[in-house]
Image (cartoon, rainbow, N blue to C red; front, side, top):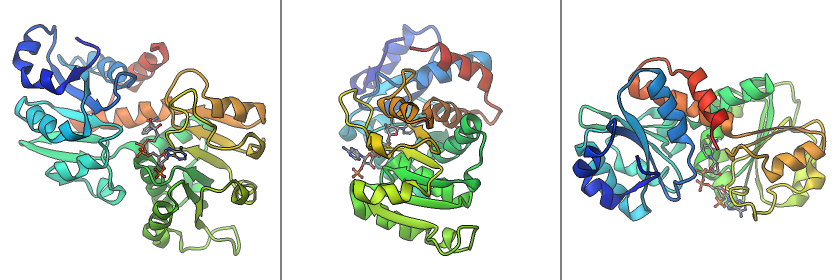
Length: 308
Ligand code: NAP
């Protein structure tokens, strides 16, 4: 199997398939896609489940997505994952959308069912399972500050916090209007009282460091759902001086090395975790949608630990 395939490869897929040991019937579509760990994760799951097929990487540009999906349907693929930049645009290219993904407005999983493309989003549930696993707490007991609330992953996480009735949710986004729009969508979920007294349970803030110290003093969990940190040259999403020992910091970047944000969190005495746990759980949930059976999580976890 090649490290990644492209749209021209899909156009001559029959020829490419002849050279494969097992057929590729699943894959992740993105651009860039070469660093995605989903193939390691899903191929370990397929192997452990005894399914005679493979999961590949497909480097597909935004303008190529519609043709790629048409070809993959004709080629009888089982399912797909979508990553940056396709999570929102994929939404308008599928035949049916699961109600949760509909609210989020973004997809990360597609199932080919009866010749139809059905879209799902497993990022929110995967995030919730990851937080429980790495910090031994439930979202419902947390005051969450979400950086990057306007992106696909950020919206999925915000909706999950709302569904699980978290104590408090502060939405922060560089493009402030996106956070404000999301806050309006979620308002009904935060109308009930909790133990916080008169403080608002849901707020949307512009990306201004001056507004953050007051909020962080009232926060348990900080989530980085921005793309800051994907490149090593990126600035920290949060100034070092804002990090404090009472915080849990979850960085969605799924890299085995410690991200700069997590290094800064550790220096400040805060607990931190990277996005590998979310990658595992969102991937396991996708596997369960494709095959309607429990995902072999132990094998998937081992594959992620051994990757890279
Ligand atoms: P996306 O839809 O492109 O959203 C990107 C977000 O980052 C937006 O909120 C954007 O703000 C913000 N942003 C980008 N550059 C910024 C900057 N210079 N300063 C401040 N904010 C900036 O991407 P996504 O799909 O949500 O993915 C976000 C991150 O989560 C990526 O690193 C992705 O790899 C990771 N992720 C991890 C998992 C996992 O399982 N671990 C799952 C999904 C995603 P604007 O709205 O202002 O543009």
